[in-house]
Length: 223
Image (cartoon, rainbow, N blue to C red; front, side):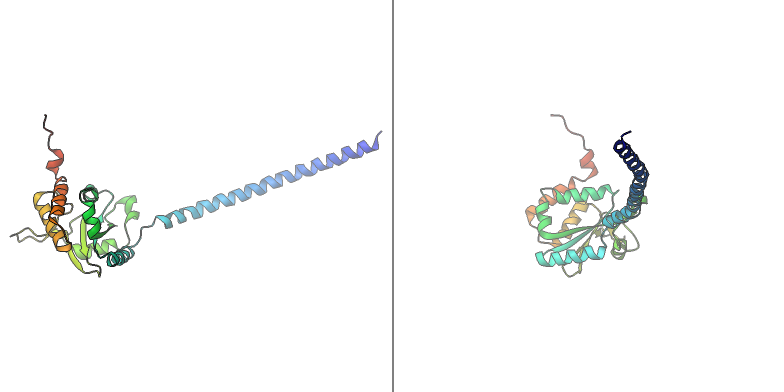
């Protein structure tokens, strides 16, 4: 019998036995590492996402707005809104319209504060925003959109509450101006809080009048 061959086979057999014992240990080690990694993701990833998505506080937003307004020589327009609010979207669309945007950009630092959300949307609200809203809106309420205009030092210049001329009723929030009277009142607010030219008055007036329900639902005349 070839002893060298026998020894070689014995050696290979022992190696295979050793490998067969070690392999499960390595697999188990890798599995444990993987479980720990997945567990850490389950625990820490939601916390990281929550920290990233948490809205900024109203005080921080306002401080940054005042700082920028002082730097650029503008006033601050604060718009209270909510994700479900269709009129809020109309207000923003009107302000950002190409016919109005140059005026609003040169006149105001515009910031938005989220309030009055429902259910799982509550997390969208800016901390402290509702308290600021209540401070200026008062007990009567008035919904959203609601806007305030401050100078660069934080002094209130105007808001979107308007008291009908000759009426004993308290001032009401006009929200997103759309009717002729609301748009006219909005123009007076802008005159009080900015330098607005006649051409800019015309542009803002015509754009916001398009928000009127009548303007939206008016039938198209056949040619």
